[in-house]
Length: 359
Ligand code: SF4
Ligand SMILES: [Zn+2]
Image 1 (tube, rainbow, N blue to C red):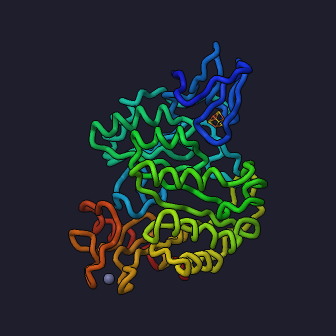
Image 2 (cartoon, rainbow, N blue to C red):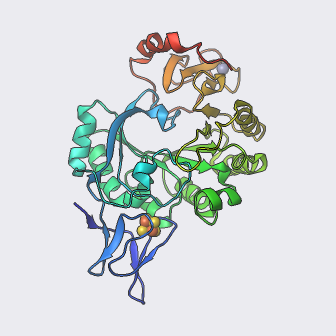
């Protein structure tokens, strides 16, 4: 399909500077940017992957991970090929590191129709970095809003003031994925970016310029991306810039792509990261990719009651009143929305697996 991109600047040397992400590729005629899906043809920047959906499936919102926005929802997840990062452990490398334009042709209307057909409450732009196809995401997102669906980015946050402004036009929620707490040596070697400064700056801008709900993820990679000082700096930044109620998820790494020789992140390393988040004052810290671990749950920060009990992506019990306040002490828990109907059914389905893993 393809379409002319909106985020770019013309340079005096004839090149076009793409402003969709912080790579700021300066692209000559006939060439593509690093992501492989934006390129210059006939003097214009094209989003070649506009309307080309390489993956489309239903996920629980908790898989993103998002736990404080519309919990229990099913969402329709879509992606194009390409990415602006080169993560050596990418679990979606088959999609993200492909430099061909492939996938089903879908108009924004068709994307939204599919989401509705599968019973989704929202659309997630995920699996690869969505800011590289933001013009397509925007058109899908505007259409989704017309039909009462919400929009989520699962993003590495390597954005620009221009892409953040565009996000503000259609996005309801974003989960920004740090890797190795954004520590410089790690991101240079394992991601292929000079540093994480643009990610921190984008988060500030999202906070200042939009009403988008923000959650933070940090993939903790054993040996090379598990620096406690970097984790502390990240937690301090979140506390100062976004506030103590911002959810943070420490995710367990599993070996993939070019990092098969690494082990799974030890559970106690994740627990140490969680402890740092709590020490720094963050009230809602979680572990992810560890189904059955008690730190998947939401605890009331006032009385320690388990207000949402989880197993993996499932909600097992919901102990909040109609205003999302703790059933025991009435502390307000900053979760937007609540599960509709199916949480109890999920409980029955998952119960038999619940004791398989012992932490
Ligand atoms: S979106 Fe693609 S072309 Fe644009 S700056 Fe980023 S990597 Fe380069
Ligand atoms: Zn309480």
